[in-house]
Image (cartoon, rainbow, N blue to C red):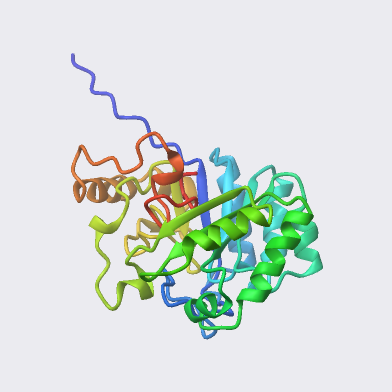
Length: 286
C-alpha cells in the first residue's frame, strides 16, 4: 500500500497585529487607507488578548503591532505588555508623532523594539507626504529612541521622483540609527491610485512564515494581501486558520502570480516581503 504523506503545515514565526485604521496622519501612500477618520474595528481587547495567547501557543515568536497608528488604540499598551509578559517578542510600528512616557517605558523592556517610516531630511517634503506637520515630532522621537537605547529600525520610503531619500537615510545614520533601509512604495491602499489590488504586485512569498490579522479579525497572508481573507479569529482559532486549506490556497495563488522561479528575496529575508519592496527593512518575514 502506498502511503501519501501530507506536506508539513507551514510554520508561522511572525504575526502582524493590525490594530486600527486610526492615524493622526493621512499619508498619500498608506497601504490600508488609514487616517484621522479611521476606527478601531470590531476586535475587542478580549479578542486581541486571546489572539496573542493563541499565537504563543502556536509557536509564534514575534508579534508586530501595526496600523494605522497602533499607539492610538485604547488597549494597545495593555496588549503589548501582555505579549511581552507571555514571552513574545514585539515590535511597534509607529509614526512617532506622539509617544507618551508609558510607551517609552514599555518599549524599553527586554523583547521590545520600535519601527517607523521617514520620508525626507527636508521638513516640507516629509510633511507633504504625511499630509500633516509631522517631521519635527517624528525626528525628535527618533532621536529620543536612540538616546534611550531602544531597538529601532527606520524605513525611508520613496514615494515620488526626486525625493530626498538618500539624504534622509544619511541623516538618520548621522543621528545614530543603525538599522536604516530605503524602500520603494508598493501599489496597495492609497498608493494603488484606485486600481484593484493585484497579487502580482506582492513579493510572492506572502504567508511564508508570516500572517496578518486586521482590526475586524480577518486573517491574511501578510499586511499587503489583506484583500485575500483566509478566516476570522472571532469565530475560528488562530492555529486552525494558519494551517487551513484556505491559507494554503491563498499562498498558492500568490505564488502562481509570480511563477515557480520568481524569488525576489534571495537569501536576504529583509528583502522578501516588505511595504517598500525591494530593499526595505519592514519585512513581515524579517
